[in-house]
Length: 253
Length: 222
Ligand SMILES: Nc1ncnc2c1ncn2[C@@H]1O[C@H](COP(=O)(O)OP(=O)(O)O)[C@@H](O)[C@H]1O
Ligand SMILES: [Mg+2]
Figure: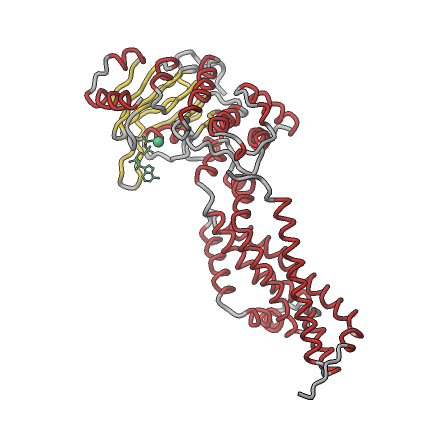
C-alpha cells in the first residue's frame, strides 16, 4: 500500500497497451495517465475502442501487451491483482446492469458484504448513504424493474460508490436513456466530479465534457488521436478526424 | 362383458394405497431435491475452467439422457453390487431418480444460465465479486426463474417415472397396486384408482411449484 502518493503519481497508468480480439487490433499502443481527482472524457466514433480501453482498466478485458497500473497495483492476469484493482475501481455501464432479483438496497449492499466482508447492517447504512447521495433513497425497497431508466442508472452509480472506489469508469452512461432522463444522471456525475472523484467517462455529452472534464481524449481505430483541455479541444481540434467527428456529433445534438 | 365393477376391494385397501401414494410422493420429492442440486452443481461444473470437470458433466448428461430409465435403475440395482455397491430398493429408486432428473435439470438450467445477459456477469465482476459468487448470487436465481416452467414439468415427469421403480420392488404406489391386483384380480378398479391418485399427486406437485414460484420468483421484471 503506497502512502499518500505523490501528487504526480498517476492513479491509473496505461503504458503501451495493446489489445487484440483474435486478429483484430482493438487497442494500439495506448498511453494514458490519470492523476488522482482528474476527470477524463473519452470520445470517438462507434467501434473506436473506447469501451475496450476502459474495460482493460478493471480487467473485464485482458490485454496482450503493455502495462496497466492502478493505485500502485500492476495488472498481471493474476486474480490477486485483478481483485485489488476491482475493489478500487467502480464501473457504470450503458445498460445499467442492476440485478433484477434484488431490491435497490440489496443491489447496493451486495458488494460491500461479499467483497469487503462488511456486516449487513453496516453495508445497508453505507448503501443508504450513497442512495441519498444520488437522491433516490426513497426507492430503496423497490426492484430495478419498478424504476425509470434514469433512476436505475443513478442506483447503478450508487452501487459502485458503495465500494468507496478511488476511481470510477463510465461507459456511455446516458446513451440508453430517454432524453428527459439524461440530465438527472449527468447532474449526479457532475456532483461526483465536484466532490473530487477520479473519473474516466466515455460519453458524447459535450456539455458535460465542457463542464467537468480536465481533459478530453479522442480515439479512432483503437488509437488515441488527440487530447486536450475541453476549451482547446472543442475550439481548435488539431486533427481532421477529430474535426469530422465533432462536426457530426454537434450536428446531432 | 361379464366383468362387474366392484370397488369395495379398493376401499378395503385404501390405507395401503394411500401409504403407497405417500411413498411415491417421498421418492419424488427426494429425487427432485437431489436432481435440483445435481442440476445446479452440474451447471457450475459445466461452466468451470477445469476441462476434465466439464467433460465429465457432458459425458454424464449424454449417457443418462440417451438411455432408458429402466436400464439405469437395473444398472444401479443389479450391476453396481458386482462392484460392491449395494443399495436397498428405496435408496436405489432415489439415486436413479436423482441421476435421471439431474441430467435433464443440468441441460434445462444451463439454458437458463446461457440466457443471462453478459452485462449482469460483468457488473458483478466489476464490483469485485469472484466468478463463483457471480454465479451463485447474481446468475442463478434469474436463470432458474427463466426456465422454471420447463424444470417443473420435467419434475412432474420424474414423479410419474417413479412408477418404474416398481421393477425393483421399491415401495411406491404402483408396486402397492400390483400386489393388491395380484391378490384380488380387480385390475380395472385398482389401476383406475391409482390413475386418479397419480393425477392428484401431479396436481399437488403443480400447486407446490406455483407456491414456490409466487414466493421465490415474485420480483418484477420490466
Ligand atoms: N468481444 C469482442 N470480440 C471481437 N471483437 C470485439 C469484441 N468487443 C469489441 N470488439 C471490436 O473491437 C472494436 C472496439 O470495440 P469497442 O471498444 O466496443 O468500441 P467503442 O466502445 O468505441 O464503440 C470494435 O470494432 C468491435 O467490433
Ligand atoms: Mg462502447
